[in-house]
Structures are given as structure tokens and as C-alpha cells.
Length: 563
Ligand code: C2E
Ligand code: MG
Ligand code: MG
Image 1 (cartoon, rainbow, N blue to C red):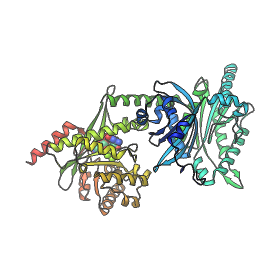
Image 2: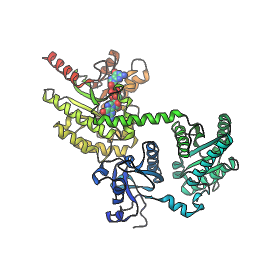
Image 3: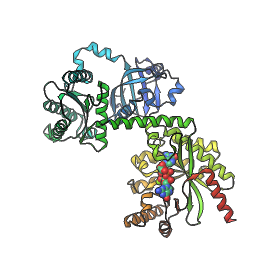
């Protein structure tokens, strides 16, 4: 191999090579699709080649309880560029085997992927290596295995002494950025200094461990009350935030801290670690630079989310989804020129559910991909039915989620929906929210170009909130901007929103784009939009989203009125 090639650019190994590896081999993309695997992988999972090609990586690498954690690890690995982690591989019968996975980020055909191997039986190797395996090479702190023993001892001690033992998970904020800015060597030195600083903060007998990467875990014995712990953690965070002097430079780092207590928050090592980790994630989600005690509600929320995901999985098979349609009116002709397909779920337990109740869970679990495909096919089928009934010229708008927005999968799935329905591509309008295209604008541009080549119409949805840059707007091959409804709804009483709406209309027209407004719910809003030459509107003022048969009736009534 060319020594100048980095892991990211290295040539992929041949099938022959991967099949001779002692462990499992896998490559998956950011959407969790498995792209390559070796024979050992199939043997370990019990899947066929076809089944492996269909499955999501989370199906293999985690039990249901672990899914949010492994998803977070994978997400982080795409950011950090590498992953070394212990997880359970789940075979088709649900049997779990612990694996040590080692993966790196690679580019394959312009796609960012994680490629790696996994070995099992590593616990035995480690035991054979003896006691030094219990310490982290860089920081000399206790490593993961030793940590488990120490937490176990802390549990036993708390039982004997009728006190509490505490598990504290500390994760540095934006350490990847720190490494990118200062280099890995300085990053490593900072970790070493931080390890010393943490050790100086705890008492003899307490444990400080490195939990991989930039995460540390403290195990504290002999604790008595929450308030004293909170005060101590506050002081610890202040200590961490003080300057580190590395190679003559003053450097600063902040962290997110999560705390779980024995016996209150769990009875065993995995539960205590998991709960402290959840609390840490909560602190991170709240902006970092803070600490958070575990509260059972966090666990409850995850459980609810997983139950919802199970129900959604069944909802696909049981055909519980349906499409509502909101008519779109052209303001020059006052004609209904199209309708936006909006998904609903008939939950057998709680009745009809709007997307706000289930889309986040569908996205998180990857179920949005099959659901989105169903929406596309159903919407195209319905539109073709209307066209055949004489409503030619009527378009249908379909919303795309960021998870569907994947370079190799989206265009074929649209082509398949068009082919199956026999609908003309020009009648399909795809809506992608501004936030999604602006997150990764270069990738979005390529993908929009692909879609444009199919001949569909492209709309940027919820426009106005996502910080579009004019530069990109000019380059994207889009046809229409749809003003976010938050501006439209405050048109009458907020001068700023009126000015922004007016500016978006002018901007769209200056780029030769059509402009639509959604969420129009009053006569005043409609008058304003008309006055400022907005091209299209939709909203409850004209008609709310209705089931397909009601859309058909509405269109027929309007047609009769015209004749
Ligand atoms: P969106 O694409 O911006 O759709 C417009 C939302 O505004 C719809 O909510 C619609 O019912 C609502 N709306 C329309 N007129 C009015 C009005 O006058 N007043 C008020 N308050 N609301 C109005 P809905 O159906 O709950 O959908 C919410 C969001 O869920 C959609 O926002 C879209 O982002 C997403 N969504 C809906 N269906 C799908 C789908 O099939 N796939 C994907 N990926 N996302 C979908
Ligand atoms: Mg939309
Ligand atoms: Mg919208």
C-alpha cells in the first residue's frame, strides 16, 4: 500500500482477504446500511447475503436496551474517525455474543463509511494478559475492566456500610474540535493532565478510570447526601475548567457530567454505568458544561421511545399509515394546482396520530426509510388516479426526511414509485426542508442534481429558518421556496415577520423561483400574500389536510362549479 495513503483513502481489501480474517468484517454507511461483510459475519449472525443487504447495522450490533447507546457510539465514530468498543452482536435468533469492534472512517465511492473488524473471546485474551491490562496506557488510570471490578466493590462496600456509592461519567465537550485545532499530541497531553487533576480531586480508595476516548469515570465510596455530592461535583467541574498548560500554552476544556448512585439508581454495574451515561448525555444535550443526576424519567423516556418504535415497525406490516392531503392554490388563477401529502398513523391504541407524534421515533430507528418509500408510492398512485379521472395538471408534493436523503438510495426509490404508478415525473414535487439541505450543502447539491435529472419538481420547505446562503441557493437546482409557516402565521401582528416574508418572495422571484406560503389561516394573511405577489398558498383558511376521498370530492365540486 502507498504509505502516503491515509486510512480514509486506503484501497478496500479484496473478498479473498476479508474472508481469511479471523473475525467478522463489516462496512456500513451513515444511514446504517451494511455495504460489505465477510463470511464470518454471516456465520455469526445467521443471515443470508440478501438479508444482510437489507438489514440496518443496529439490528446486529445491539440489544433493544443498548440501541440508543450504540447509535450514539456510531454517531461519534463518524465524527472522531475511529471506534473501539465492546458490544453484543445479535444473531437472527436474538442470541448475543460479546465482540470487540475496531473500526475506522473510510471514504468509499465518495460515501463516508465505517469499516472494521470484530473479534470475540477477547475477555479471555485480556485475562491471559494479566493485571497490566487493567490500566490505560496513556493515562495510567484504571481501564474499563478494572472499572467494572471497582464498581462491584463499591456496591459491596455500600451494602456493608449502609452508605451510597456514586458513579460519575465525565465526557469532554467538543474534544474532537480541540484535537482538530491543537493536534492529537496536545490532545493526548491534555488527557494525561486531566487524569492527574481528577486523581488529585478524589480521596484515597476512590477510583478514576478512563472509559475510552475522552470519557472518564469516577467511583466514589462512602457518600451520604445528595447535596454534598452536588456541591463536590460543582467544584470538580470548576477544577476541570481551569487552564491546563500544555507545551507552554494555556488551554481550556469543558465537560458534561452524569451521576448515578447506588442503591438508588441501579443494582448492578451495567445499570449504574448506563444511567450515569444517560444523565451525561442529557447534560450534553442541554448544551454541555454542566452536570446532571440520573432521574428515572430518562430511562422511562427511552423505554417509551423503544415501545413506540416497535409499534411503528408493526404499523408498516399492518398498513396503519394513511395519507392526508392539503390542497395548494395558485393565487393568479385561484385554482387548486396540487396537494401536499401528509402522513398520519392510525394507532390502534390512541387513534389518529399526526407526524409530530411519531416521526422523530421513525427517524431515529431508521424506519423512516420504508415509511417514506410507502408515502412516495401511495402519493404517486393517488395522483395518477386523479390524473386519470380528469384532474390533469394536478401535482402532488411529498416531504422527504434527511434519512431518505441518501445518495445511492433516493433516486432509485423515486424512480421505482414513478414507474409503479405510471405517473409523470413532472407532477411530483419533492419537499426538502431548508435545515436538511443546509446541514451538508455540497452533498445536498449533488443529490438535488440527481433528482432534477429524473424530472421531478423540487421545493425547499420551511424556508426562512435555516440560514440559507445565497451562494448555495443559486447553485441548487430547485424550483420553489416554501415560506416557513411561523412567519406566515404572525404576518398580521409582527412587522419583522411581514418584512421577512416580503423579502423571501422578492428573493425567490429574483432567482426565478416560485414561492409558496403554508399555514395560511386568515383572510388578512391571504391578502398580504396576494398583495406581495406570492405564487401559491396552502393553509387551513382554504382547506385543512383531508383524507384522499375528501380531496377527490373537493376537486369534483370545484370542477362542477366551474362548468
Ligand atoms: P410541513 O411539510 O411543513 O407541512 C405543513 C404542516 O402544516 C402540516 O402539518 C399541515 O397540516 C400544517 N398546516 C397546514 N395549514 C395549516 C394552518 O393553517 N395552520 C396550522 N397551524 N397548521 C397548518 P402536519 O401534517 O402535522 O405535518 C407536520 C410535518 O411533518 C410536515 O411539515 C412535514 O415536515 C412532516 N411530514 C408530514 N408528512 C410527512 C411524510 O410523509 N414524510 C416526511 N418525511 N415528513 C412528513
Ligand atoms: Mg412540506
Ligand atoms: Mg413546511
